Length: 164
Length: 292
Image (cartoon, rainbow over all chains, first blue to last red):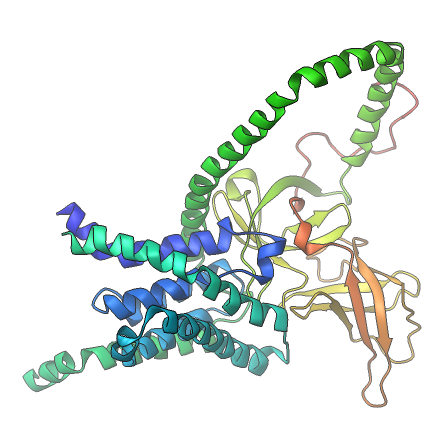
């Protein structure tokens, strides 16, 4: 019973761990620019392979937690993550049919979309700001870490969700 | 009624999606930066993430310590011989060391004096950098339990880092000067011209509302002015890096290089209103020529 409950909470728990690692365990200078977006990888993976366990509500909660931990306006990460989850759901069939190598640039594009949504809002409310090194660094780092992260998620998926 | 229930059931996915999107937009429009909604939710989130972070960090720290010890064991014999030789040479200096230690103690007491009466300091360690492309924030391992308060000034020896915007039981979130939402009343030390230091999410700060006729030069020191009470007066912020008058507008465009290297901040000091716990502010300077 408890194990079954944990299994259904697995996407949420893995996203929470990704937030902790991304926001606190990969800290400081060198990672400031090349910091991978582990949360988007998790959301993308679970929405694609277990859409029943990863919907807009989970994306909303994830975004709010990210907004709380950073100083971005409340609701901004929530908005961008919901849009990404809806996009993944909309094109999920196509993505699932693609080879893994082709999904790597897709993740890069998703990170860019996430940053673009946030950038547009920030420019509208707080004036023009642009840090190209962060805007480029994050998609690049996400693409580089993606194979390892997806391998871990596949392991969790197979050992906890499919085994039960 | 049944018709509506069937309709809702059939279209529940689009309805949930639309509802979450609308709530996000409402939050964006309703919650102003600096007034971030119910505090207990943010406290709970900070505490949860802080706890997990400590669990993750402790084995990493242990492994690092273990590997350092193994490396040290290799060099132990050689170091032992070297230290014995050095000890023979250094023994006569023992008396001098005791003298210096006493002087160090006195100077340390001076250093611990509060910057202003009514402020006490609190040491904290930076345990996370929660910055994104559009926000600059640091996570500290000190929270309400240790005495941290919202709006406490965060300092390093070089100057101001920012202020605490959120406190959990064991963690605090610091809005750094670089953040787009950061505004600090300040003045130029040489000319006393007052302005506002604003973050731009870049590596530099901008000194705003300085009139065109004010004499500002590259290299001028910028300090906190103490106006509005959130930051004590006279704390270093940075040096003027570039000044542009422009043809239009009332104010100069002034770029300030922060005194603090935000990428290398590890330990910080929080200035909190209240009496110092370790010692009361001295009414006169102590006699540094006599041992304590």
